[in-house]
Image (cartoon, rainbow, N blue to C red; front, top):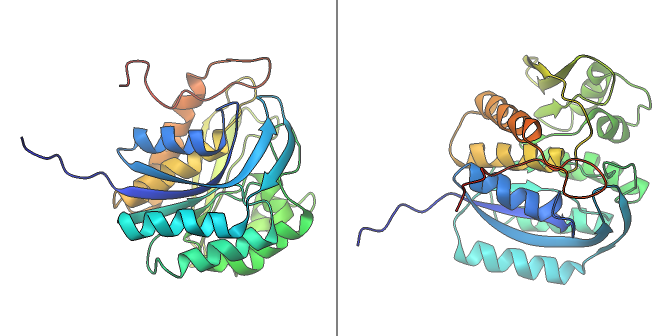
Length: 264
């Protein structure tokens, strides 16, 4: 029997969401849709549903390092996707992991707030991410509220946040959708001064796991060898379709449909 080619491996360092809407389950589903193999490494456990996060517990760094090292020793990691870290110690843990993966693209989704507004880390986590983690990442994908936290610019515009953050990271995708505009504007900024704007029709309702979906899809496209600007466009298009087809499994936000109904 002919052996099919291996799918690109993406190491996911994210939290577990028991509702299945965000976190590692979102990562796995989005990466499957990109033709990739997800290697999920748990950084935190959360108590949350599709409405909001109630509590969380960051795992011991030795457990996270052991998970990641087992993956790295066995699988050829083509990209890394970061989600919830939850502590400054976990930021430093990621830096240690990345030292074993030189040249591997790193997509940082700075998960600092849940969709319902609950905090997923102390205020110093955002500072540590900006100062120590963004410089080793290929691209970060904050929404505007997260970009304001990272830039320490409450009420700042996307352009103002990008100006503050680009000295720390080469590429920055600030996503829209948190205002009342009829179109959602997503802006890709690069340190070389280039900029790409992506607009899409605003969909009704609110969504649980959209940021995880986007960052994972982007990591998958980079793992497949797609150029960065093209990978961003592909990931945004894919994410919009998952939101268009979203379902409401509970009493809270809609959950993106990341896989087709006939997926097997």
